[in-house]
Length: 329
Image (cartoon, rainbow, N blue to C red; front, side):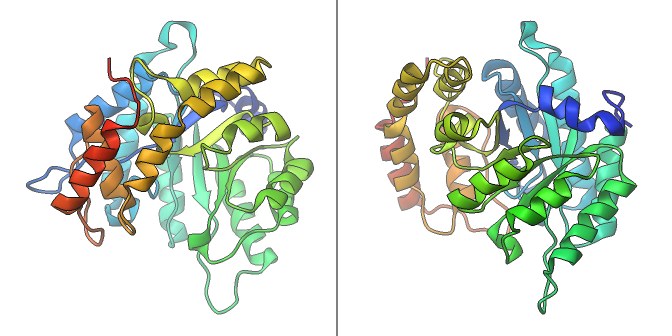
């Protein structure tokens, strides 16, 4: 298993190292065979880790289309991500790129198998979405017991993940109760603003609380004292090797230079608008992958059941990209 920390030290390790801007990967597939494009994945990882200098990567989640991948494919993606992060070392003194692997599944045995694999290969943490339950089984006791069992079975640090796809929103009180388990280190939480504030008040001393909205990230740093953006695709879709404004305003805010942080954050609005306005309904991954290609990254097709972009949608995305204001170098 990972030798970076003992189970009892997971919270302290994450408090120090699980910080800054983290991104959720997209998975490049070969256009002809739809096999995972390992060379393309490595090229993207190297760009995100070495050139964009992201704090960490969220591997094999919903953005990465884990739901259309086999267990061996998910493991292989995790292997590659850990290898690339290790090869980059401390990146000239800024620190290693963290890796949190998404081990979520409706089958608990698969969650445990992927989690143990993550431990064995040296991933930093795993993230597990709250269980998808049916017929009114989404009680607090059921959800607490799910995470308690995972905490008992695993030594690696665990991040909770609660989102609308699960069919319910965990209360801040339930999240805070789970946060007291020894190796629960963070939560990616999709509750509303009042729930996020309440959760931070209850559990912020134990775990990192985060939300996937980049537009709200600066507010969350300033108003809630957050130190972790966990995470979605903006860190590599709205940044380039010569235009790292999300990283820039994050570090400015951490340093207390709030006026300049707001100025830099606001300067990205044309890029946010262009990306959002060109995204066709129901095609988030396909659109994001095409935007990646416009940036010079490896995108490729999506797998079924997702739909590809039409030629008209690609043309609209190219037009939007041209007015985004992103600097390509």
